[in-house]
Image (tube, rainbow, N blue to C red):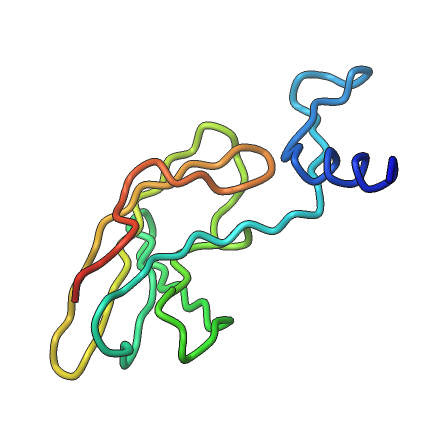
Length: 123
């Protein structure tokens, strides 16, 4: 039982600073973060995220087709440089309709952090 509590504590800590290293050295857990959005209505025909700083189109295809939750961004999508803020547009496509929803993300040395944007898109 004690091992379960230790394992739970380990996974609750996202980033921890090493005491004998400089302030810029961090060690991250094995948690991989993906930010998703719920889209109401019928399933989307297509979707992607657009990174406005450089025009990159980010396609995160690793999701369940019957699900209503669509991935916007994950930990591999943008560089992990503390203090960086990125504007991302989530582009939803259904039939001949296109809807762009703005999001703002930041990063720490480990994970993406959603700063603004909708949790549910009514489309």
